[in-house]
Image (tube, rainbow, N blue to C red):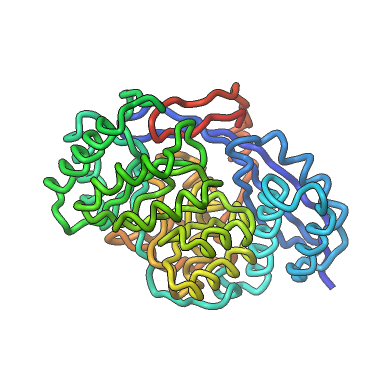
Length: 400
């Protein structure tokens, strides 16, 4: 019987670029599992984006529970790690790390069966996946945001998401609501003039990691003004723990409200569903794990709301999310980050097959990812000081 012989963590850092923004730095924490017959699996935890140095000690804590075990007993191994985490780590960072380990186990499992991962996650439920260009910053003046959207439309995308606010135009908690409404409406108006109704458009306030999430009453005023533009959805306008606020907001606007991307447990998603607080849920297998994401999609079906996936990280987390999406018949559309970064490409065995804004099923066994010595040498981990971004719609920056 095959046994796990090694569980290792690798930290990397690589530069990236966005249209209209300064160069960015992205770090990653990858988890590599090896068995006694030479099979390997590769996973990723989003803790690598924010607190990469904390990942290796967490993996070290779980390693003794995995060594010598059958890598195909994924459910049992996850239960063992959860038991080890009782009373101190049933959500947040430990779950994020366990999710990366689970991802590596599924990659290994599928590769040993010589199948793409979606085949072992339930089978191919969709022939193609519709992608939306996750374009992050909105540019000022509004016409530049419109040009940015047109750039991705020209690449074949039929849906684009931008952040609230404007890059380089500060906004804080004292900014008048009337000004916010004027700015957001002027931006969407310019984009609609450029692309008409043929493109789905979404806005994201990044409420889970924005220093200035909106209160529900502010969000109601702002999004009511945007209702006329028929957005695909408005994402994370309020703080992620303000479930009551989301429920009040959803009852007062016609624009679909999306969120819960940062959830690490099914229970966190359940709180939103019990309060009818979201129209669209956005779990991510690199935050909550594949097994939990499967349960979350089932809950969304039971509540009659849409499911999509938040997708970030390197090619490893991206590929895992896409394979999971291919196994879910009701995954309506999936995020595709358009940032340019070598860790998006070098870790793939073959490039993603994207045509006309749709992703076609990968054919490589597992998640189709690999980590080479050359990549590790080219992109050594480089920590940076933690600071909060005061950019509207901007994320806090960490030592990663």
